[in-house]
Length: 313
View (tube, rainbow, N blue to C red):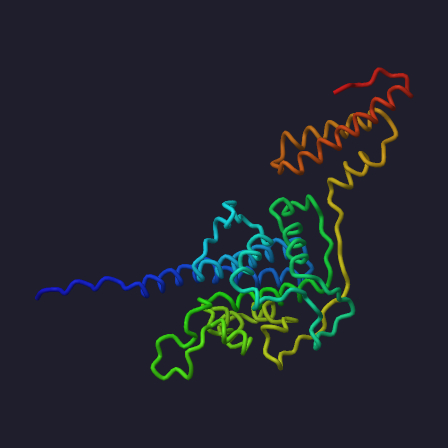
C-alpha cells in the first residue's frame, strides 16, 4: 500500500504553530508566575511579589508583541528589551494604545483605606526598580503599598486581553459568524469579550482543576478576573518597607559621617570586599565606590584630628 505524502503546511498553519509556541513559552508560564506573585503579596512576601510581578508582566507583554508579528527581543531602536517593562509596554502601546489604561484609578467597588491614583508608566517604573534582578538580594529594599496588588491585577488584565492577533477576525473562518469584526473591534466594544479566548490553562488553575490554594492565590481580591459573586474576605491595609542593608551598614555612614578614622577605614575596606566578591551592576558599583570615596575623606579628616598619619587610598 502506498503512502500519500503529508500535505505541506499552509501559511495559516505556520501562524498557528507560532502562536502555540508563544502560548506555551510565554502565556502559560506568565499565568503561573502571576499566581505566584499574588500568593507572595497575600502572604506578606513583598520582595518576591515584586520579582515575580515583573516577570509575569514581562512575559505577557512579550506574548502580545510576538502574537502580533513583532519582535520580543529587540526594540525598534535596535536595543534589547531584556526585562525592561517600560520599554516593552511602550512597544505594545504602539499597536494597542486605544486598549490600554493610562492611569490606574481606584475601582468603584474596591473597599480599601489607602489608594493613590498612579499612571501606568510610573507603576511600571516602580516594578522595574523593585523587581529587578539585584533586588532578589534586597540590595535596594522596597516600599510596599496595599494597592499595588490591585494595580498589578488591572495592568495584567488589560495586557493579557491583548495576547491575540488583534487585527484578525474574532470569529475566525466560521461560516455562521455573526459579524466580521476583529479582536481589536470586539475589545473596544466589549472589553471582556476576549477573556476566555486567550489560550493556556489559566481557567483550569482557577477552576475545578486547580487546588484550593492556587484558586485562592489567583482570585482573592482580584476584581478583574474573579467572578462577581466571589467572596474575597478582608485584605490587610497596612504598608510595609525595608531599608536595604547596604544603606543601613554603609551608605548612611558615608553620607552622615563616622566617629573615628579606623571606623571609616574599616567601612571603606568593606566597600572593596563587596566589589571584589559580589556580582553587582555598574550602577551599584559606582554607588559603593562613591561611598568609599566619602569614607576615605572622613578617615583622613579624623586622622588629622586624632594626630595619626591615616591611610590614603
